[in-house]
Length: 89
Ligand SMILES: [Zn+2]
Picture 1: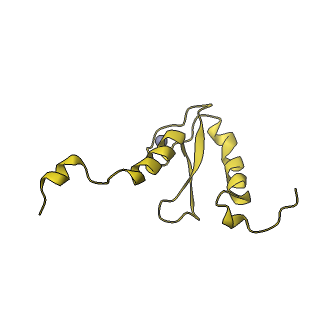
Picture 2 (picture 1 turned 135 degrees about the vertical axis):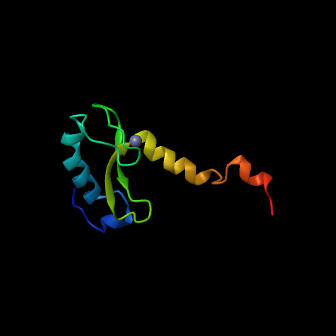
């Protein structure tokens, strides 16, 4: 219970939970839009508090959990579609 040390080291710390808690009632209404894909986050759907891709200190807002995962997996995959490898210089 005593909160010692820096929350920034963990990434998802106290601040994240505070902001998430602020969003929660709004997301629960089903009227909040996922900032990544622009679709509504349905009531009761799993969601994550999204970070800015370029600055992880910045919270962009709620996003679908699927959208959150999509960015993570996209990072692993090759950014180039198949068409690129055909035209090798
Ligand atoms: Zn989305």
